[in-house]
Image (tube, rainbow, N blue to C red; front, side, top):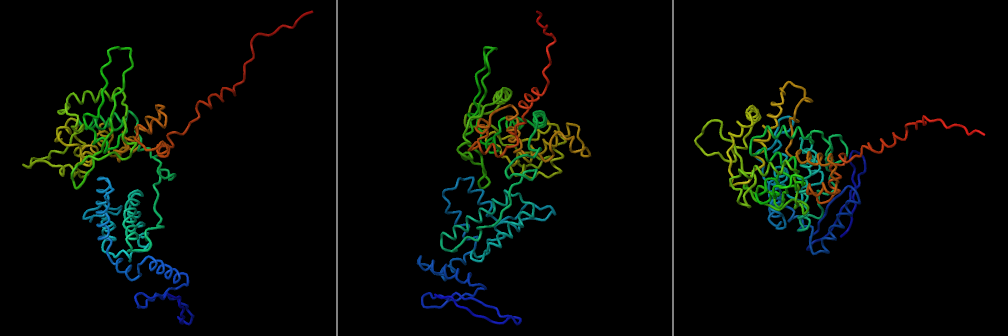
Amino acid sequence: MQLGKSSRRVNGKLVKRYQSVWYEKGREYRETFDTRELAQDKLDKVKTLLSQGQSAASLRERGKETFGVVAAKWLESRHDLKPRTRAEYANLLSDKTRARRNGDGESTADLSISATFDHRPVNEITRADIADWVGKLSAAGKSASTVRHHYFVVRQVLSECVADGRLTVNPADYVKLPNERSAAGGTPGVVDDPDMFLTAAQVAALVDATPWPCSVLVHLAAWSGLRAAELAGLQVGDVELPEPVINPNARTKPGMLHVQRTVITVDGALVYDSPKTKGSRRRVPLMGATTELLRDYLAVHPRCDEPDAPLFCSVTLKPSKPTGRRATDADGKRITPTAVDALAALSADEAAERLILDWSQAIRHQTFYKAVFRPAVARANRLGGVSPESAVSSLVLPPALKFHALRHTYASLCVAAGIPPLQLSRFMGHAKVTTTLAIYTHLFDDDHAETMAALEAMSRPIEAPNVTQLRRRG
């Protein structure tokens, strides 16, 4: 094992080259580099491999395996993953025949993990390749969190290659990733987009525009802060309703929600899964109006006597015209912008008549979001007297309102009500109170109203008494 040096003239200039020379099983191997440091680094790696009973030649042979093959083996070996995480990884690694389009209307399917890396030997993937791919994902309009999720899966697969001796280093290391930036362009992870927070009046308008029984779900989302998967995972037995109060002067006990499970999609089927974190298993108190709404809802729930029955049932859309076949979940997914406008033109009662309710199945959030929630947002704005030509500031609801904004709305309403951060953190199911403070830091900004009022009182001159003391005579 030795370091060699050679030189030659290129365009009249003397160019030095350095060679790493080593022997494996009686055969000589050489690699040429532009600098002494790179050549020495190669020799050091070869020496490390030989000390581990491996060889550079065998490493090259194992490294010829393609990323797609290695990724499939890696996912199959991950017995530690929760079903939800496994399904997410499988989805990210799968072929994308259909993908969202970028701002220019072009498909981004060619930027998927599969299309980018599956056909390539893992030892040919470089850090520059991964950095270039990350940049293209960002340029295509993918959110920072989406880019990071894709990247971390690729990095885990390549880490497995290092552990298995296919690679000596992980080419995904030291790749710069985009950060989640707030609407103001400030601290990553902070939610400060005004469209993420609704007022109580806006929540009421959205609930009124949502067909039953989904209106109950929307109300509960805004006034309990549960995540979409947690709402779908609720069962009848998870609702704790207090006994009616006999004493009219006694304080009414709040109802409670027991958050114990979520619903996820695995291979197209809905399955129950454990909550996101340990702190996500919780009891969430409910205000009186929400408690009574759930009491009325359960009174007409077809399976109210079955604790294990889904609290919110599956919903799909009836075809606008009879087709002679039974509607399925797939019917609820094919909702075009034109269809959303058509549904928004209906009243909430008319929209309810278009729904097929299956009380044997839990609600599928994707179907609900497209077939019910998006039209309800547009319907609320229509009922508020808003026309497409109206100014955006006059809208009852943000036109691109996301369902997750109802969770953020709950946080803002709790802060406005004076609920302490630690208590709010438990209600939200955050693992740590620092998570709550980090996400909603601006909501906890002290306006110093009380202290400034006290200081202002000190600034006022003290009025002199209107009684004049007489001088003592004598």
